[in-house]
Length: 337
Image 1 (spheres, rainbow, N blue to C red):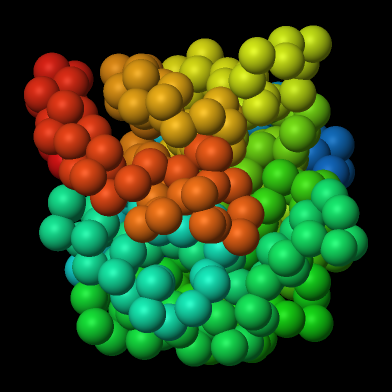
Image 2 (spheres, rainbow, N blue to C red):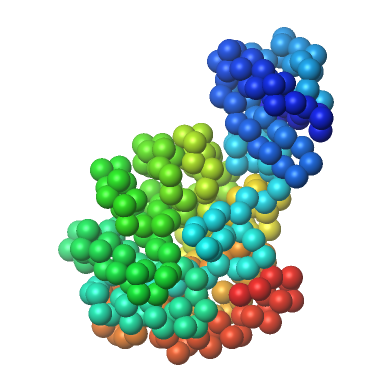
């Protein structure tokens, strides 16, 4: 249920409404926009049907939220959410570029890649310290040592860190080093993990599950937001279809669909979607044209020697060229890189 307050509602009236909602067993979530303040009453809406909420001083109108996701719905927050990380933002006019290797391999290589992507214009560094792999014999990541390398690269370049968390036992550890915690596609419906990162004070980048619908994806975002963490970034990274020409099928239609359904920022990972380095550039450009708020692009100095996903990684020179080619596309849709 959405409770829209009058423009002249006082602080005392707002506090009274929140107290009333909580007394009925609901969670109260306040969204203060430029023109209106909205209070979301989260719970079983049937219990509010007999309560004359519009009679409470300061209330302008009461609207039901028909969608199963409440806090993530644009009905709850009409304005776009902008996630702030230090001096950088995701969801504003500037398109966020998150670049770096699939996995952290060693300190020297990571710093080299970090410097090259920053010079090209990236504003976030990605790199996996904990790696979910299909085979138990594949490289699983350097774990805390890798996190230390990421922190060192941030110290040298100023780029905020995006890295994945796979297990509730590692949240506190990773949060000590990372600026944004990533929930990978395989864990999109790991509800225990979603609940725990909902208590975290760091932004969460939530990747779409391998075969997840948009509704299922937004319900996973709702789990995080219901825990109190509103800084959720959605990442389209391709879904599994019958097509085998690419690693996954990049669902770019999800970007404008999500822009209608939710206020959360939407970024695209063309690297994992296509799985081939020479297809990354065209899909990255298409993502910008579709309205994406950011891109995740894998970059490696020597893809042939990469410990994972070298076949989808751009070399620094190719990444720099792509950055130049994307700028006029961003300008054409009223954005900037």
